[in-house]
Image (cartoon, rainbow, N blue to C red):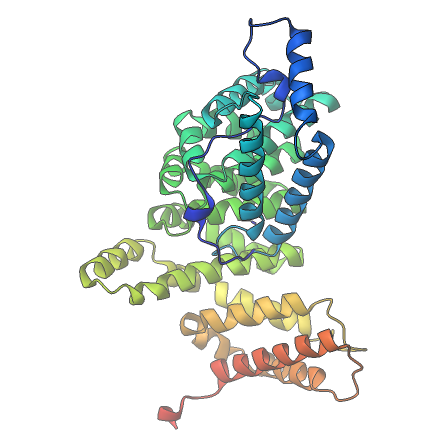
Length: 413
């Protein structure tokens, strides 16, 4: 991630062809003088239902909406609703352009065009000698590619064209953090729910490459995008999860829990949560043979054992104690509530693996949980209606955490 929507990604992506964002370049060459071509395209665009400036504004708004939704996404869920809105708007616009006989460039042609355009910057990216204007042009290429790769078939074409090594690798090896960040987002867009791209990325050591960036870069945006890309690369793919674990992925997440920005810690916890739930969901596969096969595939990762071996349970519970032992003072504030929700939910999810470790620090952990309940149940807190709903939800979550970890089931009484 970067979090959540319920739309089916396979229905969100299609085999449709894409509109070039530069209509003056889409008219076939050598047919008419350039000035005549530009004039005809301009006249056609002027007769569109939406003026071109409005189209750009609407596309920008859709982009901003999607970014806001993705920032709130859980790694394990599908693409934002914005993509459906973009697709509908995009298809309507394309139909209008076709009706006006404005040439529409196919997705594969657009991909080739962006590949060619990128090559002129490749050397400067890796040597760190781009001008500010060139940086903006590279970011524009990556941004346009990211939109195209929202469609599964386009992501496959991108992979077949060696886009991972020709475009993403140079960006990750460069020195510009904005370009790294956009390349990581592009990688995540290509790999998300796309086994073919996941396999190609594993084959070309992209898990190691992303882990290296995550471990050496201190920019929060880059680290956040690293975790988004990793999630896309390894989710529902046991072989990639094994490579991630074998190359220190769990230890690196442990370091993040020990000392990092809350935003990055939340993303790390969500990734572990998703991988834990992924394994739990194997029990819901109805076909016995398929279920056993998937279980064998996941068994090679030793995920649960490695979590214990690398002290993830201890680091998680210590994070809860560290963050909330001394900070429960003053009026109700939603400032840290998202973090409290994520860490509590993470402890509940992982408790079947970590219950012994959690109970080993009961003398530290239980008072913190009780103090949280006491703080949020304070009748003197002045709340808005929205804050009241948040408060009730947090109280239920903390009570569930306490019951899950410290209270024995009825059959043990």
